[in-house]
Image 1 (cartoon, rainbow, N blue to C red):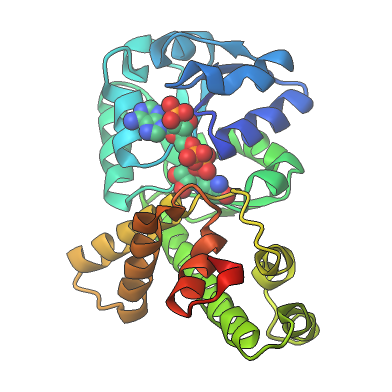
Image 2 (tube, rainbow, N blue to C red):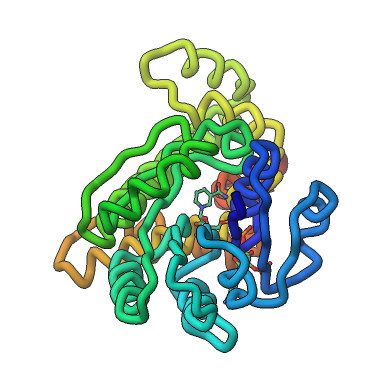
Amino acid sequence: MKIGVIGTGLMGSAIAHRLIQRGFQVFLYNRTRGRAKTLIKMGAIQTEHPSELGRKCNFVIISVTDGYAVKEILFGENGLINSKNTKLLVVDTSTVLPQDSIYCANLMKQKGYSMIQAPIMGGPDPTMKGDVISIVSGNKKSIEKSKRILSTYSRKIFILGSKDGAANFIKLALNLNIALIAISLAESIVFVKKSKIDPAIFLEILNSTYFKTGLSEIKGPKMVKNNFEPKFFLKNMLKDVHLLNDCARQNGISLSFASLAEQYFRIASNRGYSELDYTGILKLFGEFNNLESYR
Ligand SMILES: NC(=O)c1ccc[n+]([C@@H]2O[C@H](COP(=O)([O-])OP(=O)(O)OC[C@H]3O[C@@H](n4cnc5c(N)ncnc54)[C@H](OP(=O)(O)O)[C@@H]3O)[C@@H](O)[C@H]2O)c1
């Protein structure tokens, strides 16, 4: 079966990688052509623009930064809507505003295409092992048709029903959780380090308790070693807490720690840490405390 993947950043590449390994014929489109080299070596076929990709495949997965990028891909010059393939089913895995998902799904429907939302919990490494969680909303029939493909890279699929945008609300709430855990872990590490105790001991103890998290177990040991190789860019975590706050404001919801998290991720980004992993927030708290080893 032919599958299109649009966006070959960290996540889109991992999705394409997994699909190729599972025997699918993968067609790619990425705004910056050079970013798909490894996948092409694995057998993926690069297309010139989204409409060409939409003519070649009936099933297209999008993984790009935000709603602006998704709209470019769907409705821009040579966008997917120009593919004239009415069998086309589009699955957007990007983390975007619910209102953007609703807008895109409605406009696609008006033009005769089908589009659902399937944001992902988990990064590129678990995606390549088929070990992420997909959260899905939108047209029921399209969800049914997508399950087999989504289960190629997902350990579990949560179906939230036919209300477009529902999956995006949950995804933003989940990412707030990650942002705040990263901040709390970073401050704890700074506190221990400033107290002249090895933070590796702190992590070992934390990870022996009920209060451990996936983040403290997998990312924590890298954080204390100053390893912030990006798996999820800090700039994208900033984008997500910003989207959540935007959405909360529009709905009259007050979220104090979400606002603070946005400020800290913004300062970190302005200080030049945007291309690090989001756990690079530790560098900012290190700087605040004049801690040489984490700046
Ligand atoms: N990394 C993770 O762990 C993770 C986990 C779950 C969800 N997500 C979400 O998945 C999405 C992709 O994340 P990522 O980590 O792969 O990000 P990334 O590495 O920064 O890649 C972003 C992708 O979006 C494309 N893009 C950005 N603006 C565009 C535009 N205006 N038009 C066309 N393409 C555009 C980029 O193309 P260029 O190469 O041309 O810049 C690139 O392919 C994001 O919504 C992110 O929040 C990420």
